[in-house]
Amino acid sequence: MKPVIARLFSGRLAWMKRMRVSIFMKLVLTFLAVLLPLYTVTLLLNRAGSRDIRHEITKSAVNNNRFYMQSFDSEVNRINQLLLNFVIDKDLQELGNSVDDIASYDRTAKLIAVQKRLQLLKASSHFIEEVKVFFPKLDRTLTSTDFDTRVSSAEYKPLANNLEANRLVAIDERLFMSFRYPTSIYTNRPPVFVIAVELSTSVLRSSLFNIVDPEQGYSVLYHARDGWIVASDPDKPVQRSLQAFANREAPLADEAGAVTVAVGQTNYLVSYKTSALSDATLLTFMPQDDILRSLRFYEKWAWILLAMAILIVVSFAYSLLRIIHQPLRRLVFAFRKVEEGNLTPIVTTERGDEFRYLYHRFNSMVARLDVLIHQVYEKEIRNQRLTLKQLQSQMNPHFLYNCFFILKRLIQTADNEKAFRFAMYLGDYFRFITRSASDKIPLETEMRHVRNYVDIQTICYGDRIAVAIEPPNERCRVLPVPRMMILPVVENAYKYAFHQASGQGELWIHDAVKDGYYSLMIEDNGSVLHDDDIAAMAARLADSDADGLETTGLINVHRRIEIMFGTGSGVRLSRSQLGGLCAAIRLKLDPDGL
Image 1: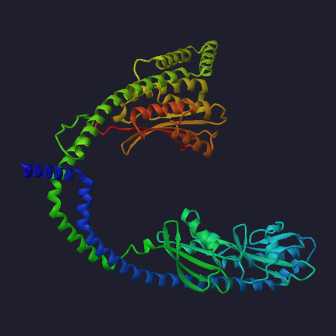
Image 2: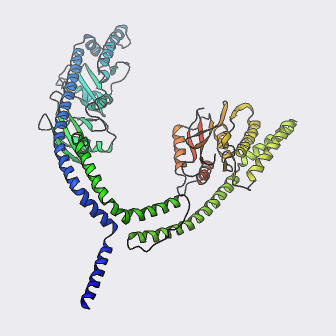
């Protein structure tokens, strides 16, 4: 009897141990047993390939840096020789020593001759942004395009004190090369003139892109002693970290080479080359992960390992079918039904793993969703009705006063026909805005109300405003839309764009259907709003759901459209083709409804 009890107890214990092994652990153990040997071989192959490729790319990067710095030094030396020729220019010396009237004929002729030579110097190299000559006695600066400019002390002093021919002087993030005449600063008198060449930092940045592709790395040209730096892409966050490294490093011991630098969680291969002429250093940063990404030599081994993995995985796939695939497929099918709006619970079965818990939780979630959907739907309906009521209550008293004033004037002038039409327009207008029978109306009905409002304003403004209303798209005329959707936008155009305008006003209402959206554009030619104002208004619409935000007509319309047509719909603001504001009402279309 005891052996039987012992066997039953041991069997029960083994069953309990098997039940404690979760599906996750089963998957982990299975994949480790299958893929660990394969990944071990792959890792060994990648490490061998990484060493070879890194060595070759390092040599290539160092050679690229060396070639770039040789070209850069050659260009700096050439510009330096051109500046040296200007130092011995007789016209410059005479202009610098002269204190006569600067408007004299001889002075003007010499200035024109020197200015032409400056233009030739500027055009001789795409690295040159501008060429300047400072005349301290005259307190004038001669450039390639202007002369009557006073000497800027912020530029003149560091350039006048520069005695190194090949030195790049940094002034307010700009780079200069300069010569002074006479060349010595140990004299009691200031220099006769200082000629300076401003290098184009944008061209320097563009040239740095030729060293390494922007998707593969970054380049930095800097001077450790003077502290200036030119980066290929200074706006990237990682580039600022690399610039900090460049500013932190003293001139490297070797003239050219490569080191490995860690910036955050990324290791970079840094190749460098220091110029013996200008003492500037070029650094090229390339992420090692990008360098080792193209291991083409080992691609065939990867395919072999992939085929082996497929063969091995197929061998145990059948065992996973009953453990995971079938119950998971059942759960996925239930979720798809929920996506379609069918909140049907799963018929649970007696299981001993985690899927039993998932099935019960899913059924609980479906029941809760059903309750919440009804609550949210009722809340949205109430909100929509409240916003419509609020919009109807925002009728402008000033507009009402103006309408009665116009009607009074028409009656006084005995223009009975126009007064009759005006009264009819007003009656239709107030009948529409005070009606609350339905929150949704056809687009054609809404457009008819807008035309009625425009007719009222046409009588008020006369010929001052030209209005063009294109008929709505044939397929979208019966599209249900929220009441009072278009009118607040048109009212804003009359209120802000045309109210104080002195010239001819233009209002253009047209539509388009594109990419599953119906867009109705209301454009005007008003000149009140600047681009910053339009951007600020668009930002307010994008953040219209924020708590405490003031509710305006446009925000009200935007919210109601979002509630009815979903995310992606609403009001979009931009610059109009007429020069004013363009308010585009976007409605997401139901592909089955049109």
